[in-house]
Length: 239
Image (tube, rainbow, N blue to C red; front, side):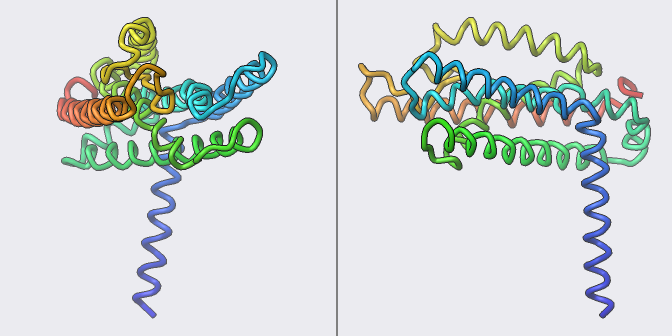
C-alpha cells in the first residue's frame, strides 16, 4: 500500500514539475506562435492548391518547415529571459548543478512537444493535401527545427535577452536562406529537403548526401546544447 502511495506521490510531483516548467518555458505568448504557425501552414497550403502546384512529399516538407521553426523560436530564444522574469534564475543558481538538469529536461520537453505538434500538422496535411508517412515526415523535419532551436538556446545563454537572441537568430536565418540556393544539393544545407530528389542525381548519391546532412545537423545540435549548458556555469553573468 505504501509503495503504491509512493509511486502516486512521485507521479503527482512529476506532473506538477512538468506543468510548472512548461508554464515558464512557453509563458502566455507561445499560444500566439502556435496560432501563427498554423495560420502560415494553412495560408501556404491554400496557395499551393489554388496555384495547382504538384503536391508530393517534398511539397509537404516545405510547407511544414517554416511553421516548425516558428514553433521552436519562442521557447528556445526567450527561455532564459522567462527564467529571469519569473525570478527562477536565482533559485536555479542557488542549487549546485541543478540548473543543468532543469534546462536539459526543459529542452527535451520542448522538443517532444514540438514533435507532437508537427505530427498533428503533418496529419492535417496528409488528410487535406497528400497522403504521407506522418511519422517519417515529422522525424525528418525535427532535424533542422532542433538544430535551429538548439542554436537559439546557445545564443540565449550568451546574450541573456530574448529580443537580442531573436534579432541574432533572424539574421542567421536570413543568411541561411540566402545560402540555401548555393548549398541546395550539399550536406551543408540546413534546409535540405530529403524528399525532393534532384532529377539528374543518382539516388544512392542523394541518400549519402542526406545521411551526411543529418549527421552534420545532429552534431551541431549536440554542440549547441552542450555549449549552452556550459555557459550556464557562469553564474556572475546571469544574476
